[in-house]
Length: 187
Length: 187
DNA sequence: GTCTATACGAAGATAGAC
DNA sequence: GTCTATCTTCGTATAGAC
Image (cartoon, rainbow over all chains, first blue to last red; front, side, top):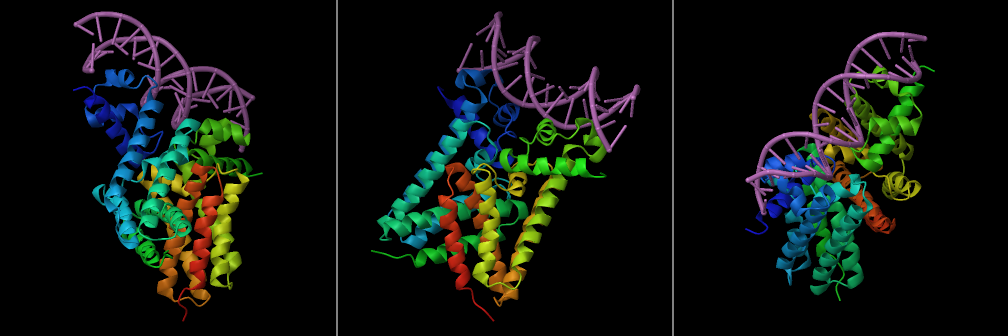
């Protein structure tokens, strides 16, 4: 198949970024984890590791938007709840070991181009959440501000849950966000 | 002086952790940034890099608690505002390049012992905030929950601000937290 | 498109003089 | 307590056959 190997590599990179960070995502481990052939790295990613990581960040962003689109037309608290489910699931399925690949890039990448891509994903996340909330009647200003609050809080909650190795702290933050979503000003 | 070199090394490690992450904190750079003698690394830290990083995490935790103690007896919104100032200052003075060293460890350290130390600092942070809030009349349960929310949200807001290279997103999250602090249930 | 072998550089750790 | 030189390991990247 045309790009199956490439996709496996990107998949492995996402998982490693989420658990071990940027410099911790070793190409050797990507190969080992995915069973992809090592010799093909530079065939699929002529730019080497940075290009592979860039693809991983981009795919993470696309998946997030895709997931959020399933909540079009829902009430604000359902939209926010669905958004949080994305991260809660990541924590649970990994036994609190995996977090956000994009956050990992932001706090440790040394290449500006990768930080730019991370920023683009965060912006797309906030924009999508803003769009859904305002689509369900929340004022645009409140929707935009709350989207920023939700994205920041969720990212931080994921980190805390990883440090604590417990979902409890995440749920405390998540409940607070859903509560706030219920009282957002509407048009 | 007895431990001046050691302290400079820990200082440099904190700064590098905050900007480049765990694996990005190279001993070579610690030496270069602090002017400390390379040959002394293993004299002061027989355990090598991990021991130096552990000292950096611990010192970060102590500084945080020290800072928070200056707000004993203040109103909830002042306590939370002071807490947020700690992080806002870190962002501003570094031109949005530095974040939280403890978060950096959590998302990229491969050594369990370091994650444990990071968790201890997060716990101490939450405990101190809880203590101050309940000391100013907030119910213990609300104080504990809100402390978790504030720490998580602030951590996430710092990451977002770094990605955006702008303090704006941090302030949106900070304002929301201060607003919430005004309406916490009291005894 | 896949694979092996290898070059190259970097980073952490060590030895031992001063 | 400081310093230099060096060792070892490892990770990325390349070359070139298949």
